[in-house]
Length: 409
Ligand SMILES: *[C@@H]1O[C@H](CO)[C@@H](O)[C@H](O)[C@H]1NC(C)=O
Ligand SMILES: *[C@@H]1O[C@H](CO)[C@@H](O)[C@H](O)[C@H]1NC(C)=O
Image 1 (tube, rainbow, N blue to C red):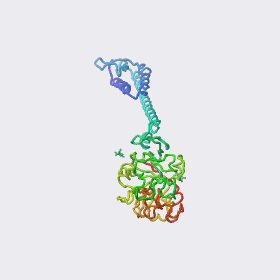
Image 2: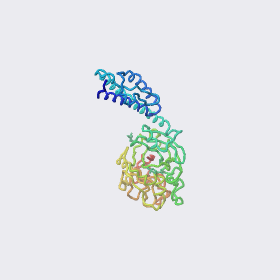
Image 3: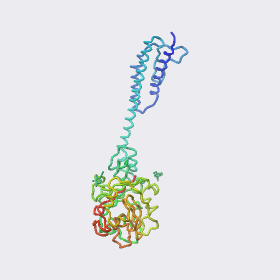
Image 4: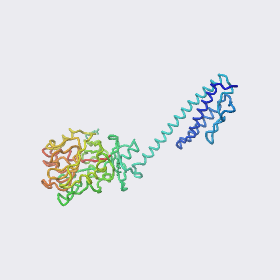
């Protein structure tokens, strides 16, 4: 009996295949997959490897004739050397090929199992993160963890540990947007009265140069389901570390389930500007552009926006006709002073280039010097030439009777 090169080749090949089986067994897959794998390999050994009996022969100087690949598996080594005839070699060859195919199938099954395991783990997280029992830090964190997360209500936890519920937009431009506030004008005729939380609820007065100060304090008010019926400010406003904002213009009294579909203007920034200003509007206004009557800073930044619903033309068709010559649509502009040095917190959807800011921008301090208190309130002087008349310096009725919702991402 002699070893032909062909014999040796098949022996090696068999060794190699069994070696792979061994390394698969030796490798420690995740618990559930591992048990299944172990069963599969045992089955494979019993049904395929053991009946492979073409003879058994090793040169005495050769390697040990058994594989020892784990404490439990001890596989008889394959060899065709006992029978030198071609039929045996052929049989060996085809059995080895069969083994290899089998091995490939097993590997694929294991890969599938591992995939299923990790998707199950994902689902376990989905059931938890964003629930009352496991609040997220922001909608972005939830979306980053659970890619399939849908628009809707989630529980979040502020840096200080306050748990609150809010709306997450999980789909616009890849989602992860947290609703943090809304500016709602409850009474256009009430000039800096109850409900004017984003300017002053204490009258038009220079005694409070910052008004109620809510753009830059830790006060919270309102609730997510009333964001179009009243002002909203949740702890996310000052505790989320964000990069961009998204604004929705939603008609007053729209129910939560329709905020998105009823928002006739929806747009967001993409340049990550908030990172330069402390990660949220609280820091932007507190540390960079305080909303203070006759404040020392200049105007704040005007950030370009991407439209999600609506357009520059739609916005222009809703603004007071007289402001059109003083604005550039396609931005969101923060802390903009008017001719009389009264700051406006936000110009939604536009950059204000002139001095009659009070007819297009919202929120502010407590004193508008021109004709106090006529311009004092959350929507300032949007009714200058009549309530919703859409003439002169008055905006359209729709704009006057819509809340502006603010999201962070
Ligand atoms: C906020 O997020 C930015 C990344 O966007 C990070 O560099 C920064 O350290 C974070 N700040 C805080 C206070 O967590
Ligand atoms: C855009 O706004 C209009 C007006 O509210 C609305 O009818 C439409 O459904 C919105 N479009 C999308 C894609 O949501």
